[in-house]
Length: 377
Image (cartoon, rainbow, N blue to C red; front, side, top):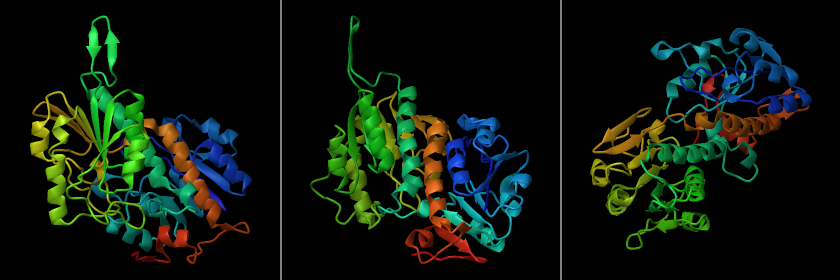
């Protein structure tokens, strides 16, 4: 079994799919690992680190892919659009690809992978079950995103986060509001609390209240009009109906303007991120306030977000990053590599790579196979 670890070519991407430690464990398990030169450089691992782990480092992508039955990446491979390299066309026919693939958003990519007869496994599709927990890449990368979002807010906020008592007087702590209390949101709450801010959390899922409070933050809850059945079977927030959205926005309009920093984390798998912060809310915030829109890559939670850019509106700084986990690329890569390694361990049977579609995890993540795009509920 030959495995290729490719260098990421997406602009701004600093992560790598496997660390040298993961490579060493896979080689011990029987894999022949080829690593494209400089694949781990921006995560702190040079080519010699991979050689020391037992991998063969190849100077080109083509050499790394030659004879490989499995390829691991972080970002989806590009299909040559907008002047970018055609990574899909370089993949060996019949190979298995393990990567983030945005399957609910890029049908064209899936069609092209199917045409190459690539069996593509989308890391976004790992089910949220106890058995699949070690493979849950969405959660591992959300942890990085939540942590990094607080650092960005602190960087752009023209004041301290903690309360300080000094000879020059007492500085009040900043008020941080986190919208969306999933993995990223809870990590953001925890990080902001450690930095000394006064933190509030909000989520439409009633179960999130206890989690937010356990981290020492207050939970914003609309007791007058609670959202019924707001959580899906997979633990995610469901899409709201029009009347529910209107109630939600009216509720948030009373709280967003009071915050010094608002971190928005709400995302719905396979759909555009919901609108949580309107133009009117932004214009009600004090000058110098900050919004960090963690959902920018899927459309954004703030009406004024420009994905990949930092803008200022009415004195409020709006940060809309599209590569937050890359900002802590080494630990993000370590966690992602653990997710990938766990999935690969599931696929190996008696020394061979086997895609057993009767397995619930394999069935969930396999989005193209045998020349066709697989349909998922």
